[in-house]
Amino acid sequence: MLKRHLIALVLAGMLLVSCMPASALFGEDKYLYIESIAEFIKENGYYSSPDDDPLRRALVTLLDTDEAAFDVLLGAMLASYDARSMLISSDYFDGMLQTSGYVGVGVTLALSQDEAGEDVVTITALHPEGSAKRAGLEVGDVVVQVGDQGIESLGFAEIADIMRSGGDAGSFVDVAVMREETRLHFTLERILLGEPEYAMNAIDDDTYLMRWTKFRTPELMDACLEDLEAMEEAGARALILDLRGNGGGLLSMSFDLVEALIAEEDVHYLTMLTRDGNDIFSEELKTPGGGGFGLEEIVILCDGNTASASEIIVTALCDTGHAVSIGQRTYGKATAQFEFDTPQSSVVILTAHHMRTAKGFDYNLVGLEPTLSVENLILPRSDPGLRLREIALSFGSCSDDADALNQALEILSLMGAPQKRYRLGEDTQAALNNFRQQNGLARADGLDIETAALINTALMGLPGLTELVDRQLEKAMEYLSGQLYADASAGAADESIHE
Image: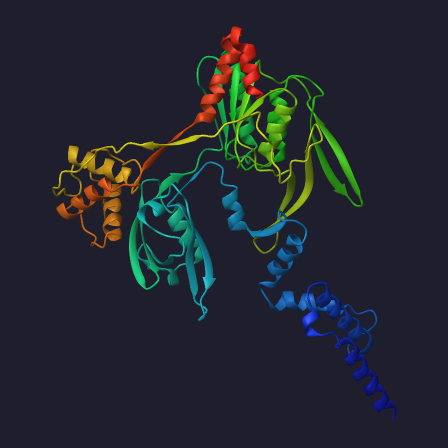
């Protein structure tokens, strides 16, 4: 009788926790349901006890038996807080940290498995200046061969290494891809892609141009300070600080640069909010003094991709009256993140700080308006009028015809600057064969008459060519000229910059 009574209690308990309709089980409801099952196990499970933690046991078991569970759980936990807290692969993170360009063909690859469990390597992005894009590779192409090896004989890291950095700039790699049901072959040149993280040079005796593409290498700040000292010794009076396209990096580097460019002590240039337990702390960042390097004027160039650490520099210098900014509204990232590695080759990124300008403005997701809004111009470029003589050229030919061929392939965006202008070399040959493939012709050595005629047809049928006019830099130079050299027009220049 007692046994039947206990069984009835168990069944009643099970009915109680399972009465919630399936249609209601979303998010919080699902968690509460699982939690109720865990409590039932603790109270009634033969192998459990009131001190047991069934949820913890389940998670440990899941992590032991499912290799992907660690990243899935950790990624979901981070992503539930804000859009910038996340878990990413260390390989991708390393690519984000690339500081001075890299030698490669300009592709981003992703590894997945097909229905049979076989590896599939797909192109997910193309660098706009890479040889892969020029050759005609497309997002979605499936890589099936690199060099003379099929991908089944290579690991994913090996494929990426061969295509991205397996050789010196100017070397070549053959790649085969499947595009739907068609197998295509390309010969790609490895070239230097990307800009240096930092560069500085004199524009004239009075003005220097400093360019930062990101802030990721603290050692470069030493080089920057040395350049600023040399600039001061040379008697320069103005600096143009180009932060266009700079997505940020290390906060410490932005603080260092701000403090180097402000001479006065105790200038409040940024407010940083940080959480510690239940408390939010507000810290006012102030300059130590002693910077400035004799500069009379600073102009910052910014755009919609100026973000994070770069925006700190914009607001710190402009809001304190030490610079003006020219360009477009910045991105609007007023948060900063911790970054650390996990045991499973991934990186945790957790939002830990929130910034406000010295004047108290929260520019997160809003951005910073430039002192003077200026857009660059994209203007039509006239037909260069170049046409090839429709003759055959052999590989290695050196002549004016080879020079014209190289120019034509550059105009058609099939290759970059040739290794030897007057020679039909390996880079020209690779571009020719990629052009042939795009036009349904077989690969061949050198230039034949049919291909020459097709190139001429392509030149005549070019869509409108364009060129970029850097009006932002021009406006910066105009402003500095008014401020530094034309005392009579200084007032007018000051009015125009604040319009």
